[in-house]
Image (cartoon, rainbow, N blue to C red; front, side):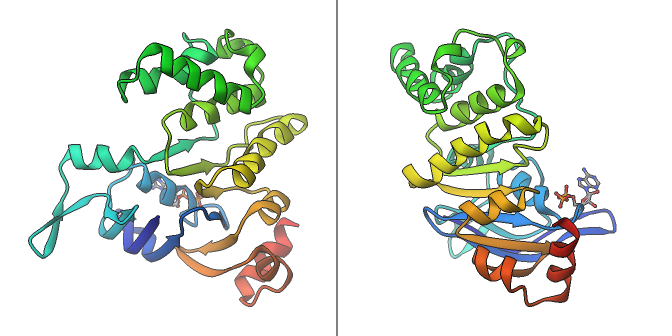
Length: 251
Ligand code: ADP
C-alpha cells in the first residue's frame, strides 16, 4: 500500500532520509520509533506531500505519489495527480488542528461535503457514525475549545476517517495529552486495528502501546531503518547495538 524506494531528503547539507526503503502492506500497522531527529516525522510529512522529495519515489496503492508515468519513465506529477493520490491518506497530528469555529460534527462533515462533494445529509450520517465510534456522539455539537485534549484528538481521528482514507498516519498523537486521557485515544487506535482493515503508519514514543498494537516496528537511526521486525523480536531481542542502546534508554 505504501512504498518508499530509495527516498532521499535533505535540508541544505543535512541529510534527513538517506536512500530510504520502507514498505507497508495493505492492512498492516507499522510503527516507527527512534531517537529525536532520526527522520520519523519527515517520513509522514513526505507522504502527506507537506515536504518535497530530493530523490527516489514514494508509491501509494501502487501509484507514484509525486511522479506520474509517461511512456516508460516517470516525470514529476501535476498537482491534480498529487491531490488524487494524497486523498487516499489521512493524518492525525500531535496538535489536533481542528477548525475552532466549527462543532465536532461540522469538523467531520467539512471534508466530505467540500472536498468529496457528498450531500450534507450523507456527510452528517457518516460523521455521526464516526463520532459514535470514537465515543464522542454526545459531544458532537460542542466546539473544540469546550473539549479536552483527548476528546479533541478523538474528533480529529473521526474527521480524518470521514474522508475514507486507505492509509492512516498518526504522528505522536498522544504527546500533547495529559497522562490520564492517553488511554481514550490509544483505545480508539486499538479499535481501528482490530475492526478496520486500514493500513496504518504511526510514530510514537509510547513503547508499550507500540508493542501491543503493531504488526511491525521500524527503528530509525540517521534517516535509515537500522533494524525492523515484529514487536517481540525488536523489543525482546534487538540485534543491533544502536537499537539496544535506544531501547534501554527509553525504558
Ligand atoms: P524525528 O521525527 O525523528 O524527531 P524529524 O523528521 O522531525 O525527526 O527531523 C529530522 C531532522 O530534520 C532533524 O534534524 C530536524 O531538525 C530536521 N528538519 C526537520 N524539518 C526541517 C526544516 N523544515 N528545515 C530544516 N531542518 C529540518
